[in-house]
Image (cartoon, rainbow, N blue to C red; front, side, top):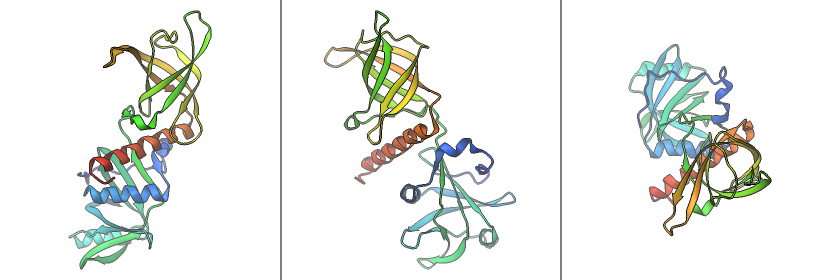
Length: 258
């Protein structure tokens, strides 16, 4: 993975729109740093004043709570990194922007080579640019969504639907034809989304698309695309964490790590 040294870091102090993408759990941060090492991600380190250099995360020392970076072959770059109050690091992992700031950078040796080390950051930005990226839900997770809709007689009915994919913008579910009267553009308040952990999330959904799909056994089902409407920040954070953790577990399995 290559980071562009000319790409300026995001000023998260001024732009709170990225708050929902911020990771603050020590375990999540450590795992993300380890992922950067495993994928050999190049990191663009910004010292301020428009000055930056390329580096990489070499090691995470969880016991001493420190992260080790490769030193630059440019002595001036290292001098700037050691003197700056805040070294902002930007990279990409699986086409997703990662940004974190390091304070208190000092010089070190790593396997006989010059290195830089600093305390493990307290927060990391994992910016999922593809707002409507869809994660295919593993069959073992069995995520469900309770829909508050109407039947053909316009009477209230509760539908239990299986979630087949989920993203930051909404979900797609499978329903039996005739289970309820759904209209594209119609809003469904009082719905409940059940993730593998925690209490169900209460939300409002908007019907975006409906299509018929024939299963291998010949059964016909409706695939319904639903958009989140006014999703609370804490609920959005839970969904983002679920997507992040599921992606990480899936990638680890594909690499033979689990």
